Amino acid sequence: MQGAFLLEQVRERVKEDASLAKRQPFKAVLEGDVALLSAMDEPQLMELFAATHAGKTQDEFAREVRAFFQTARHPKLGVPYTQLAYAPMLELLQYLRANGFQTWISSGGGVDFMRAVSEDTYDIPPQQVIGSSLKEKFDEGNGNPVLRREARVDHLNDKAGKPVGIDQHIGRRPVFAAGNVRSGGDIQMLQYTKEQPHPGFALLINHDDAEREFAYAEKNDASLKAARQGGWTVVSMRQDWKRIFPEGR
Amino acid sequence: MQGAFLLEQVRERVKEDASLAKRQPFKAVLEGDVALLSAMDEPQLMELFAATHAGKTQDEFAREVRAFFQTARHPKLGVPYTQLAYAPMLELLQYLRANGFQTWISSGGGVDFMRAVSEDTYDIPPQQVIGSSLKEKFDEGNGNPVLRREARVDHLNDKAGKPVGIDQHIGRRPVFAAGNVRSGGDIQMLQYTKEQPHPGFALLINHDDAEREFAYAEKNDASLKAARQGGWTVVSMRQDWKRIFPEGR
Image (cartoon, rainbow over all chains, first blue to last red):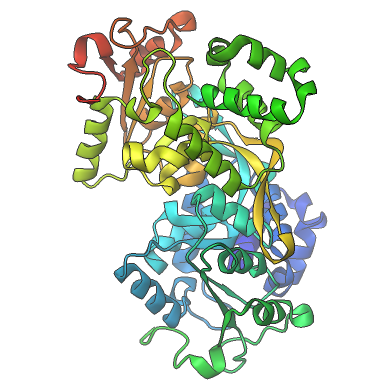
């Protein structure tokens, strides 16, 4: 969904400055539409964020993200993105909270992007969201101080960056972490959770349900291999999930 | 107290490698003792952290900090540092929490240092502590993954860095923030809290009680001037605080 949001942002920027449409990465984005953006990995998406958002204040950015979520629909599934949280994930989060756990999101996507919808979608407040981020700068702004986004990536919350993000924000190893099979982005987080003086619970979700959702093939099956080596619990969406999305959506 | 901890750390390093005692900044630290370290500002302290801690794991570092707090005493006041939390600050934190606020620490000092004692001292869990930090790196460590501290400063949570740290960790402007007069380190945080669409409460504590605690003179009275300009509430430790430290310590 961050890809779709970026596409819209690039279109807006091109309205202001038509010459951008001929320059990369904007050109590729505009020509390739969502298909191309879906293929971009987190570092590439964050670079694009940096290029499109430098100078914006955090408040402006948050307003744009919220406006996006009010109207945007998933191109294949045809529903608002906020209705695409997995039902078993919402149930698990609720179960953990009911048993005294504090629940967090550790996303490869932009932290400010996720924070705009984390509370409505997952009942997780913004301060419990970890993600990739741009550098930001305090601007006194003539008595009306704001934080401005800079054109530099501050933290990439992907792969080896995930345990780092968790330590920076939480300062403790997770007791439980769940990741998914996609681009190997959760392997290090799950290793960090599972291997420690008091081993945590590492859960890996396998997207193997092309009919009800998607089937992602991962290069060398890296996540599934790591799961076997580390003794993680693997969940098959096809075999283990009665339903994928909440009913009545 | 971070200065005293660093002094001990430098002494330990010199035991391992005597040549360090002749090199800066170690030499100055060893010769100047606590007096010199007290005069160092946060950026200098963080540079020293970077120099003394590179390569250590976060777990090792946390153990050293906890060991320090178990035996260390304030050189002038002669009591453990964990007993030096201000009584009115503890009362205020308790009052805010009893009224539905989530309380956070935003310290100029090292975040991992503060986190080791924040819960015992202030009833604030590690995930609600924001501070300065070194870069850290994930190390697979042959199936026993750890995070290692690097010799580079990642974030300086001082002055204009404080609103940035708050936004990165909380993602919302504070409703209330309290700072103190010392080196102007809280000015931007208080401006950021006070000036916004819905103005927050900015509180500034003035260390003007040489008899019961300390009287800090600040260059150009920067914090007090900013308080007058911004309409912040200023508290005099001498006039407004019945007691400084909890009774019975």
